[in-house]
Length: 229
Image (cartoon, rainbow, N blue to C red; front, side):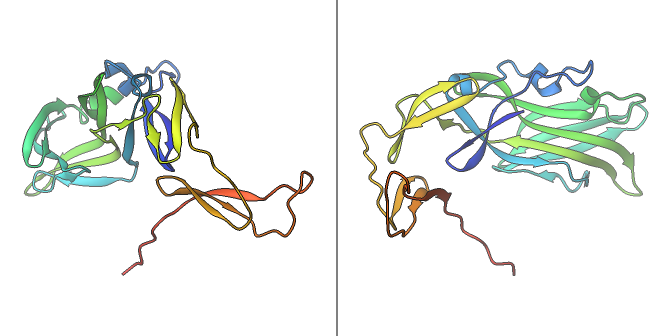
């Protein structure tokens, strides 16, 4: 997928159509609209994880924003997994995938959920890749080795939208340009100047500022670090 940094965070901008060999990218292929940035919207990346994990009929996969993916049953002879996606306890999607069948493809092994986001129609906001499925002593078990989830609510990046001192001046399919139109920013030594959403400019406490020795500065983002318990 294509990502873009905005306000110091990683955002999803659309799915890539780049093939791997002869394979067409699955999530690009099944999305009706593949690019949110064209519609001047970004979706925050919530999960992008390839760690292996197991789910059972009694322990659904917990996701962000109140979603959970529940495995309601399997059919070993077909290699089928019956899935139910819930949000805040309410079912929003049901699908059957076939990760356990012989010669299963990426399409057979991948659950996806599409949603309309503003002007962007039926874009995949959740994909889960199943490695295999089997029956335990008292419950059905599946191994997952990939989870991708983006927010189901968009961040507005329309032209002329203002974020503190900065303004979006242009939006293209692969870029966002910002400026400080109507908001002058004066830099002097040893000064901390806020730009937008925890992002600022810090200047050095230097004795001399000249054309040959311009003021030194850096752009930073404030972060809160949680202490480990």
